[in-house]
Image (cartoon, rainbow, N blue to C red; front, side, top):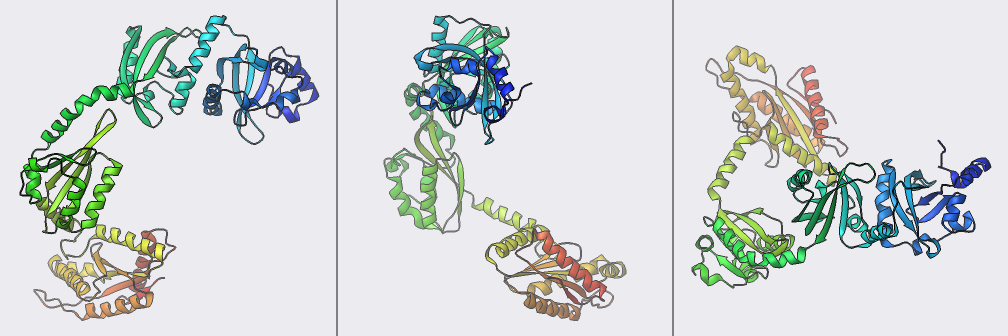
Length: 538
């Protein structure tokens, strides 16, 4: 196979002469720069140029239509994937129409861009003047026309469809409802044609389209294919559905009658409020007296009911601008209550028609959740934070150290010979030792420090804002206080000691595990050096 990668600059005389002897026009076109890179003699004649150099210097961009430009833009990703594209083209060199079947394949420019190697072939399908004109009309009509094979894979589409769906290459991807697309493919297996109105995907938006679909036969392969024509009917659908707005607004109100409701129009005037809403906000007037009220002014007048008045108003404005469906917020009231607020923008056929606020008193639920959260983050035996709380706090401290250069230390504390205590005195006495250690940490650390029980007899202390030297001194003080404490056991009082590893959070730590590993290594160093002591690893 002849390689065309370096044809314009590096082809030998014999290769160029061989290509020039071909009656088939061959040329290489740079799609991105819209200029010719190479043409054999047949292609030079086809394009009506006196010399190859004159053809290479020709400004194709000045005569290229937008439909042609969109068509070539669609070729680029397909060629980059290695696809060979066989399509009919009409060219107009010197104003004269020339129709040709073109086989287009990938070609890499010297700059590494994907270009196009074109072979002008004799078509096995003869197109008369009427057919050629019809083909050009389809290419320039604003109606979107796409052709798919029987399995819904795209075969070809006109420039209007190309402009609307550059990244969508399947029948199903054109539809907002993929189940509808699958159903249509099945229907067309038994019906020759069908028409419907559906919501279709156009770039990143959704539009109402009228669809005409028909089953046909691929003139090249003889296999079934599907032709789909689309017209945008979004404006008409918007008018048709306007009458549904009032009905939809009433339905929304009915759906939430057990909570406080406030329905506003697009100008932020009250349409409907219910009694539950008035009760939640202590409004003495009946709900119907609120109709027509300016909600922006009302929000300003009621913001004192909340612990964060300005935040309450700012969040309302944010939601209305964003129009995100079913955004839920927790509102803390100045009287100790908690309200959950849900925001639902009302859209009919993609047209905005106001929004609904739903308020629900969740004070009891909030207290229950807080109790569950406390239990989930607390060690039940000692009352200290558990491993889950340690991991969350350690990650937060590590981020602060890395982001703003603050200091933080970590202590790892392990009871010496704890197994002996349990085996000799029993687990109940061992639990007393764990609780004693927890109390010592709780009562002799700063309020900002976080003591945690992270294992059986293993404890860790996160110490934000503390230097290495300060942490080392605190560790020795804790060591002495623990050693001097006495546990009143059922048989006889006993004492125990601990080994403590000290380290710091460092900005260069890749993870929290790096910090805990240093603390663990320091703690085991203290064990090896005789226990009841402090060891440091920076």
